[in-house]
Image 1 (tube, rainbow, N blue to C red):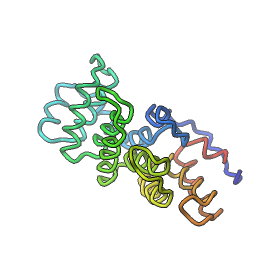
Image 2: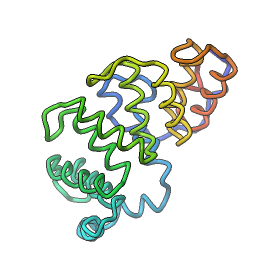
Image 3: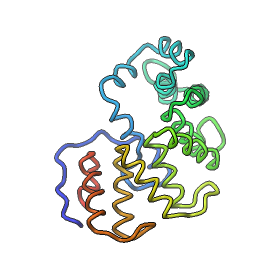
Length: 212
């Protein structure tokens, strides 16, 4: 490897999305995005679903995302209801919340409450990325790299999107960008740049990157 020092702190596990999609860079930017929101996000996740619905209906896209996650995962005494989650995420995405768009993308990619549709998933991932959501940028980058959902395989564009997601503190994206520089995929090989991005992924608690 590049001699990185392994972090002693164990991060919370990344969410299941990227694992289910077959991505190996740390199993998902979703956990990175949620983990970075801090105590305020934790407080909202513990808020009463009825209050979250009122806020969501009033145009608060972030609360739509929180409420959608409650329904998607069956939290806070609410029965899991992916179909309702899908509608709520759509409401949040339409309100301009990038995380809601990213959740929509994941549901279309995984075929949750809708038939699996990678093209529609890419549409919402692109929308999420435009709204500066790290997960959306990471998923879209991964799909450009692998040629998923009608996208032509494009390592150069994938590297640009990994860079954008990394700048938004997506640990898996930083790892992917580091590997791109290590192996010259879409960028000129550069060991120093590879080290820089792998170290950043390690700093963001992606222990897998610390071992590279």
